[in-house]
Image (cartoon, rainbow, N blue to C red; front, side, top):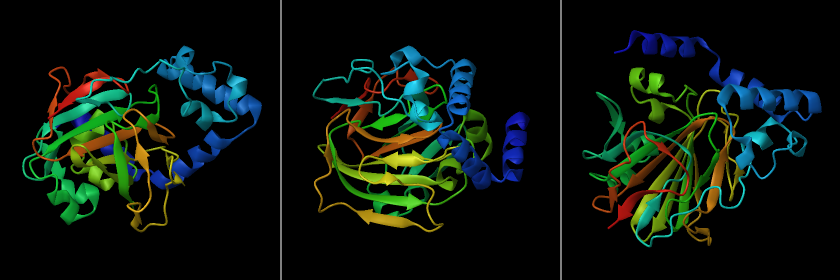
Length: 283
């Protein structure tokens, strides 16, 4: 194991993760013009953010840093693959891992895996994905931070699971077993032409919140698991339609049932992806 990665994780253990994230959240929500414009300029320079893709490149149009960070893009900036059998990326980012699951085990990094049951917080639901397929997509601070549907589907339920707020970058993934099943997360279960699938928003260090289009601000919660049943509501979404957003870099995990999709050959760890591009073929 990489000693630098171990040290990075050890330092994170010492930090007051939630308190620090709440502090950053307050700064990110500040509407003082000079402060929020300073934060935005620093972010653009530090992370090489392409502001020209945004609906507005005028910093005065953003009421605070978070509104900039979750900025909308111009029409056509992220075309949605229209093939009838395509599965598209739900977000911009980098492929952390992708492939088949062995029983209910999900690969986190080389030599490290974790259980779908722990990730989803429900052992019965995890059985649906036994020997299925998964992908983990990491959103860095430079990326577009809205999350979209990989395929058309209807929301059945969601589950907020409290947890840690470790960084979700590659260093932490290599050194902290069960990272994605330890961090705060929102599990969303959908019904689609592929059957049921799960999309998981994973919180991380400095993430000021996860929002959904149906529930608004979802995190942080009150320290307990929160289940919400939407099966009686008509919360249906088209492929490529927005469903939520992160207020800083984080991770999206997709789980599909056995023999439902074939990943594209180019969809490999460390590959860059953009929301809307084809990442798999539906069977």
